[in-house]
Figure 1 (cartoon, rainbow, N blue to C red):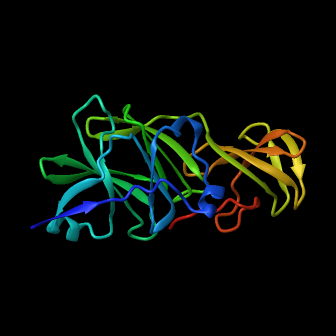
Figure 2: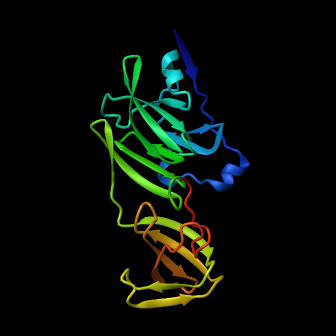
Figure 3: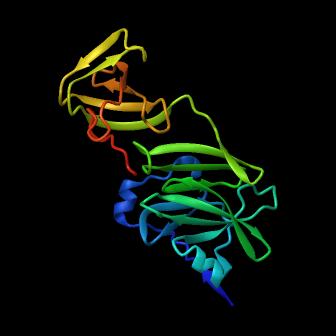
Length: 233
């Protein structure tokens, strides 16, 4: 027995989401798919994605925690098709899953952690989201041989305008041999970037005057800069 699933493509979003989330200009041509159960989760897909598909009852029962979005081609020049899904399992671990389509069956291939995904159909996949990391992280992957490979960045952009919870020092390099500035508690700062995708190392900080310096994450549960927190387990 098979059941046909039709996913309604929502071309609008709530006032709250419209204020909180801005679509990057480079992806404005993609079709936005919203998931009603998850107000800040979106998939931006090439317009020819398929939103009507059949799933066997057994497949649905085995993947009951998945929200299925549609059939997509990561690379329009190739024949490979994938069923795209979203899940928060097992413990608020937001991620998008890819199931390779072979005839009428689907086999799990890989997952990407994130809350927003962009698939323009050129072989690249982009994700963003504050999930299992310290900030709203943006990553690019290239699709090849039924899997993905992350494109390395020199730094990960953070872009958090905030203030210090405690006094901190900024340094000219990560050896901390030369101090750039000393900032008191309550100083306005902008977290420009992180050296690591997991945020566990150094962050590049800009002072209200415009000086730049490196600061190392000091406390896991309550860092000295407000707004940085690990969203995950």
